[in-house]
Length: 120
Image (cartoon, rainbow, N blue to C red; front, top):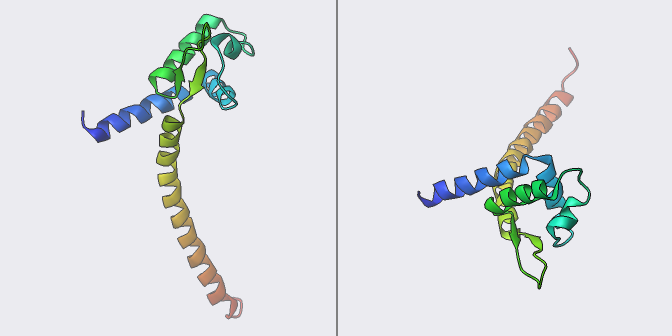
């Protein structure tokens, strides 16, 4: 697998992981700071085991990591992977913004041109 294919695979796993609303809520919670599995499970009406499986998916996608803090195993967001997703999205957002700016310029030119002519 070359570098481009590996990057595509990472993006695929990350976007697939974020396609689930429970996992998106977990990521949103982790944006406020690390939390244990039990803490992450509190707002949900699903089992701790189900939350653990969601965390595994996020971990396999590289979106979260776990550390050891004495008896605790807090889950953390992986900012590098989030930045990679943001960069990928921004690349296409910027292209579209340039296209819209070009369209705005064309429309502004048409408006200026038609403003001098009498109607109809």
